[in-house]
Image 1 (tube, one colour):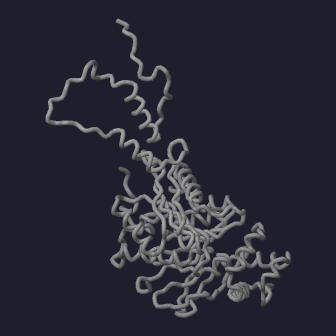
Image 2 (image 1 turned 60 degrees about the vertical axis):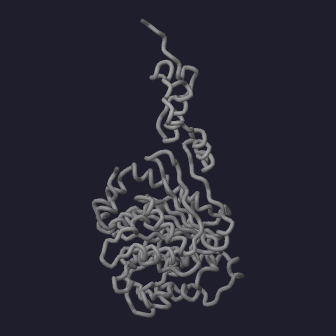
Image 3 (image 1 turned 135 degrees about the vertical axis):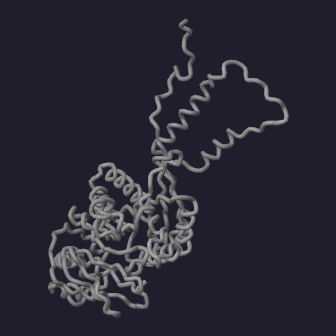
Length: 122
Length: 290
């Protein structure tokens, strides 16, 4: 699972009001090279929750992302490549996602988070 | 009629390791899936600015439909309820991210982040109650409301569905409309029972107010609208006076004339059958040899 997906994902357990962001418990992280597309990154930038992305990338052991960000940074190639790496190339292979409110763990195996809810959570 | 997999077992049980591998290694299914997802992507009508979009593939299975999205350069998130299918997707190294999730439990995604959603042959599974706790209406509602939430303004969702009957189609469509979607059903090849494909095209947000529905495809790749069909019907309407005794038809009964043959051939062509071309010999009588 990439951090792009993590940034979009929230837990939808019944009764949980704010299931975002899910906390990452990383056991194994892999990197896969993906071709960079600046237009996509610029488009995604406004949808990304920056603070969450920083937290997530730190949990995965990547600390290059700058603390603050704004649109002017998007012109710099250096920033784009860091952003690209954090968003699309870091994969959480094994570990878990934890709901911030209820503490429910969603295990991640082979890069696939198991988001299935139990019957009493629907 | 072919048996429907959703009548046999719940999706996570029906698509076990064996079935998932069979599904993905069948070249026929691969081809159909690719065609369907290409058409769905076309109906999604994404803005043609060359910028890759973030799409959702609901019921992605082994990632056959996602491949079409990747080929077009889009990033996608796929979700499916069958772990076996997802395992195959991992083996095939698909480019999208995969989630093991049940669409009937609602999608846990942030509001307004997804640029479009497709789903190939999946939504009809929601109409089945596979567990005692399942209620198809509630599951459809949970699915469509959560989908509406996570789509960005003006985004479209295209579902290819195989509804079992008219009631089921109504059920799905009603659930979508209640969630706030606008749109309707596009039927490709409406005259053919084999090639007939239904797409549910839904729009969310402001653009839906003036969005027009695309037309379904016909055999020649031309779009066919409902107007054509109405004209056909008008031509065949005839009033017969049943109180009068019928006059006997003159001549040979077996020959129905060139016009009738042409009409029949057109009908077969619309159904997607292979029909010889019309020539000057069409409908001509044979020589009397004896």
